[in-house]
Amino acid sequence: MHWRLDQTVDTRAGPVAAGTAGDGEALVLAHGWPWSSYSWHRVIPALAQRYRVYWYDMPGYGRSGTSAVQRTSLDVQ
Image (cartoon, rainbow, N blue to C red; front, side, top):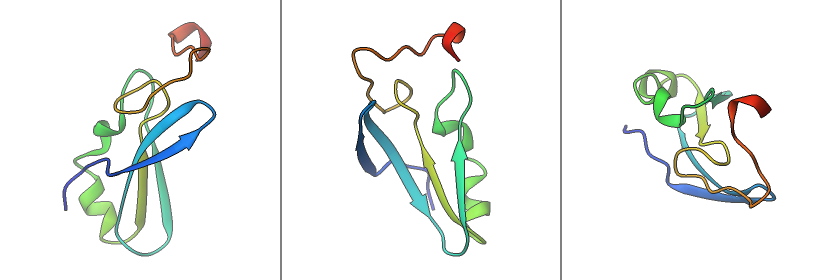
């Protein structure tokens, strides 16, 4: 199992890149500022053995887009 963002979800904040793996109870991984979902790439395979893991790049980060009005700087986090 490899980490990859193979889905896109359209949101008001712009397109959000996401990925899923595994079966079982849902586990959502949200990255911190200023990272991307790639920060989870080493633990996703182990977690996917027990959980249905969902990960995504927050709007404005990684492979996700952003709206024209969205700000992602540290002062608004």
